[in-house]
Length: 455
Image (cartoon, rainbow, N blue to C red; front, top):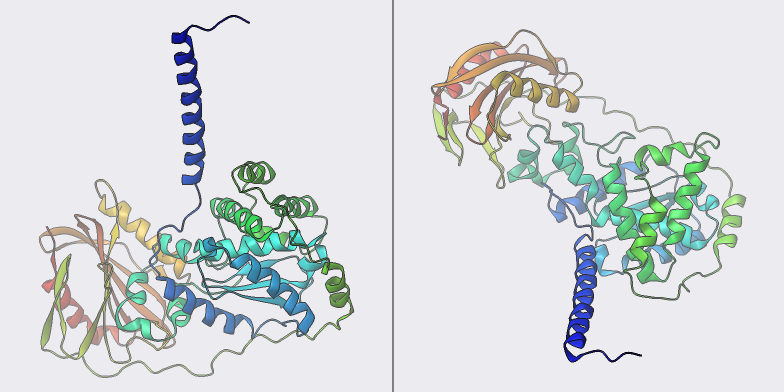
């Protein structure tokens, strides 16, 4: 063996340290990619409130398994997974739904449901734990309310802030098309959300003593059966495959602490046998709609106005109306008593807000985009005439007349006013039942004339 000169040792040592630094940097870079909750207009407390209200609504429509041993088994697995710090200490609950389809879902704030069909399809306890870990990750990463926030639906900020937030949150959101139906934005996740739930779910499984690979194996098994087995497609309609699941989880395992996966209790076969022996309960009927509607307010708006001064705009509104500003955004609602229903639906009043846009705002195109967005949240909305040009506070603006279903019954007129603003597109929506609109039009015109926008 040749003798290495002193300078050569220094060079070799430097190379070794450099390689170690690169390896450390690579590991640190991966650690920085641990999924975190994204942009969200909802507070964590509102996630929890929404989940509780949603659970009460859903449990009116489904049959829960009322078997102590089954429920304790699923809850024990779920609580073990949720004990990890990354689960963020939400008030998690785990319940079994009597349904042959292979599905599981999580509501914001903690309620998690798993169908009997999914439990029967699992080959081992780790696969069931993988599904629960995946759903816990959706809750901890706040995917449901994140997606609702990114949708930028009209008056979402106003509904979440101020005085309106004291009532039923789910009822308030229903007017924006945000509910717990099959196609709800709160329950259907994007591929990127699925990817992050896989990654965080793998970490939760590792800490709880389950092999994370089993989560990927189970999802891949279901993917292979799509189209051949009834009930599988429902899962992937709300949990789209992000691709390369097995590879991604195997890569994640390399960075997780080494553990022996000994959490399996060996009870899955017994639980499956119990479920197979339970009698099928009769299907629950869908809850009936409320028979009556609240009447529209009949009082006239006061001729005396008061001033509202916001960060981005100011205007005057009737003295016998109330202003409901959102503490975290520019959104404000103005309405008389009874103009906003207990469930949050506005049937009479005015909504003012700013739709944030980057770059130069093209008024016509930005207005078309806003109307398309409003229509997605309210399918009954339609234009009744062409947009008309006007001037608002010395700026070019558009008036667009719309109409939609009124929460008081019948149809309502929605006059949309849009104008350029330093932060994007400013808009106001003047709302009234069609038969009342002529009586309120002078008030709406006075409010619009008093509008002053930030420069």
